[in-house]
Image (cartoon, rainbow, N blue to C red; front, side):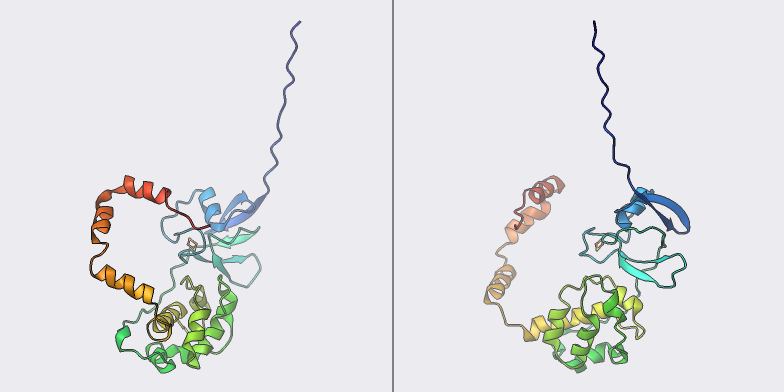
Length: 237
Ligand code: FES
């Protein structure tokens, strides 16, 4: 007699879906996806407005809304998970005037920063910038430190800025915080921070061509070698 084999069926847990709207079109997507992954899930191929996918490069700044909710929410699309009823649209990047200056000719003080970014003095201390920062930087307090001339403190406060531009998008004074913070970090690095002998020695060696041969070899090695080297690199624990 042949024994009939019992069929075992493994029940897959049902995926919970949420409803989102992209440019007005309704989609059902799995709960827990980031906005980036949800857009890809529904078929968008993302070429622009996406970079590291890990919250570091600031390329994916996004705004969204919910039905009947006046508020405009902001976040990084690679870090923000979709929520039921989320409305997403494409927005243009944050326009930001990029000043040109010669760091060698600048003084590390408040008047230098204000002369390049006069809009800083229009800060109304509304704190919208701080509330919108995905990096949880105390943006408004940093601006106030700059205005008080405490560039060292400000430079440390804004070290984690990824230049996503969300704070600038919300600022009524039209301050372009990420360019301001970059200047402050540069001034701090050049004029205020303690010099590192180790770094200076390395730079000198670099200028004298100590690594030229090795670098040239690497530049001409080609994609397969770069890939192998990248994959076998030492990763800090
Ligand atoms: S893709 Fe780089 S921060 Fe989101």
